[in-house]
Length: 317
Length: 206
View (cartoon, each protein chain N blue to C red):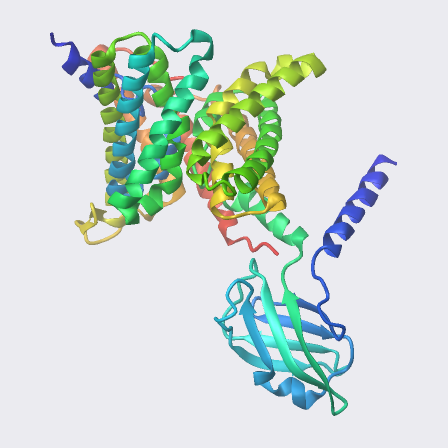
C-alpha cells in the first residue's frame, strides 16, 4: 500500500514538473523539443505546407540570452502528417540552454497564417536529474573534485558512523544550499554585496549546523546521540561551502541549487560508505608498517577515483 | 633567542601541515596538477595564515572564549575575501584554475587549528612566525606534490618541457593526487622510522 502511494506521488510530481516546462506562445505553434543532440522538433497545431517547411530562411534559431548570434539550420524535414518539422543543425546544441525558434510567414494550404515563436528547452525534471547525477557520480565531490577529504578520511573508519554522517550531511547540505541560494539571489545581489558571499555563506552554514544540532537534541535524542559528534564536524567540510559557491557562480535557480545539494550530499554519502567498507577490511590485512593508517587510505581513495573515472563517459538525458 | 627560526622550521618539516598533521588535504590533492597552481594557492594560504594569526594574537584579550570559533571563522573569512579580490588582478590565468579553492581557504582546518592552538595564547611576534612557518610548510607540500605530478604526468616542470615525453598520464588525473600523497606520507613515515627507530602514528586525518 505504501509503495503504491509513493508511486502515485511520484507521478503527480512528474506531471507538475512537466506542466511548468514549455508554455505555448502562439496558437498554431504547439511544442518544440530537443531530439538528438543536433536536432529540434517543432510541433504545429495545424498542417503546414511542405514548400514552406523546406525553405531554410523561414527559420531563425538562437539561444535565448543573445538573439544576435544565430544558430545556422542545415536541413528541415516535414513528416507525412505535415504537423511536425525536424530541424537539423551542423553543431551539437547546448541542451542546458533555452533556444528560441522563430518561424515566419507560415503557410497552410497555400494561405499565409502569420509568424510565430517556439521556446525549446529541456523539461525541468531532466535538468534537475542531470544536475543530481552529475554531482553524485560524474563529478563526485570526493573522488573527482577532491572536496571534503578531511571528514572523508576522518569518519570512514567504521561503516555505521559513515552511514550516520552521510545522512546528516545530506540533510544539512540540502538545507544550506537552498538558504544560501535565497540569501545570495535576493539579498546579496540585490544590494550589490556579492563580494561578501564567502563570509555570508560560512555564517549561514554554521547557523544551520547549530540549528540542526539544537532541534535534533530535543526532537530525536536517540538520533542525536548517534550523530552528536559528526554534526559539529560538518562545518569544517569543504563541500558544504563549495556547493553554495558553485551555485552562485553558475547562476542556478532554486530547484537547480537544491538538486546540486542533493547530488553532493548523496555522492558524499556513497563515497563515505564505499571507503568505510574497504577500510574495515583493511583493519585485518597485513599492510606494510610505513603505509599503515592514512597512506594506505589515500592509495585506496586513488583506486576509487580511478574507478569513478568510468562515470565520466555517462551521458545524462 | 633561537625560538623564531625554530618555529618556522617546525612548520616546514616536523609538523608539516600536509604530510605530518594531515590537515587540509582537499586543496593539496586538487590544485596540484602543476607547480604554478601550487605556488599560487600556497602563497594565498601563507598570507591568510600570517594575517589571521596576527589579528587573533592582537585581539586575543577581547575575544570571549565562548564565541572564539565564530570569531576566528569571521577573521579568516575577512582575509580570504581580501586575497580573493587581489589574486585575480595579479595573475588572472592561474586564478581561474584555483578560484574555488582560494575561497575555500576559509574552511582549511590548518588555519583555524593554528589560531586555536597557538595564536590565541601567544603574543604577536611568535604568532607571526608560527603562522609563517605553517604557511610555508603548506606551500612546500603543495610545491612538492605539484612538482612530482607535473613532472610525471606531463613531462614538464613550471611549464618547461624537461623529459620530452609523458611517463605517467594517470598522475594528472584525479587519482594521481591521492597516490602521490599516499606515497609521500609513507616516505615521511619511513624516514622517521629510520631516524628514530619507531613507526609514528599518523595524524587523525581531520
